[in-house]
Length: 413
Image (cartoon, rainbow, N blue to C red; front, side, top):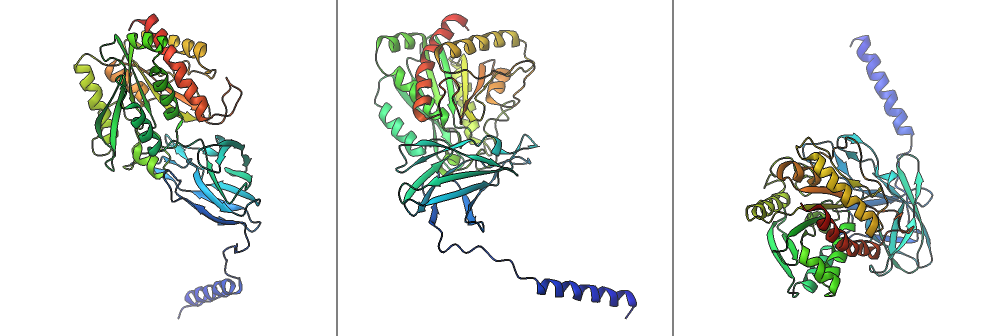
């Protein structure tokens, strides 16, 4: 045996001896912890796992969903139920917040400012979060009873949509048409409100990203206002008809996902080219519907893509199209009307902003339709000086009815 081999064996045995002398790491035992269980068995609950820090903090590990053929990943959906002793105080930390967006590393921790809590899953109230180093966020909570729901924003589930559709379906001003199915086979529908022979048409899409329910509440507010049957609603619907895809990413909503569909596609990307019917059947169905509307001479003249984020901006894209100046003038009109008739006070994108691949840019480039991406701040409504709620977003939808009426009255697209 050579000297080098002997030395190598000696070093290996010494290393093993060191490992043997060190105690094996052990899990934190939490038999006396006031938390009994985190329940994620219900509709729209977040996929997660949890354990306990030595000081009793509950470490909530959100699970990422990933974009196909891309480094992009996302974990930002929060919706679960705590089972714990009534009156007990819990400390939770949310982990796995290091997202990758458009190939750039970042963290959703910067946008996590509040959660909402509810004992019954219907009445919600806001609760601030505390930012921690290393992209962690802390929640301090006292249990008002043995069960408590925690969510990032007030949830809107498939069952909420089904209840909404059932309520409006009998109205003679409403038509609900199936246009395709999701990856898992859930039916996608277009809601039409008003007379299809009206001079103008506006399209709205909500919930392309599963964690972002604000758009659903906006849609509900708009539809209910248009169906009120008063003189204003009648006057508005003489001028325009509304088409809505209320929940684009139904699979993601059902499973508590954050951003992508179940084939790993971002449904608010790749609108600069035809959708892949296998990977993004949700976008393919919408594309086929739109092209059918164009063939019949009924293309929408305005489209809004509704989202949530931590800023609440209006994203007006500036791709190199011949009619860009006209588009920007019309979007300036839209912005001015939003500021006049709604609580919108946030920013709109300026200068050479591009929102490549989004529905807002893709519909303008491919179809010549004036379209924007409208975000809603999930932490704070500056125009109301209040935390966001379903009621606030429904009010915004109601206010959009006036915005659309004046928009089509002034732009004459």
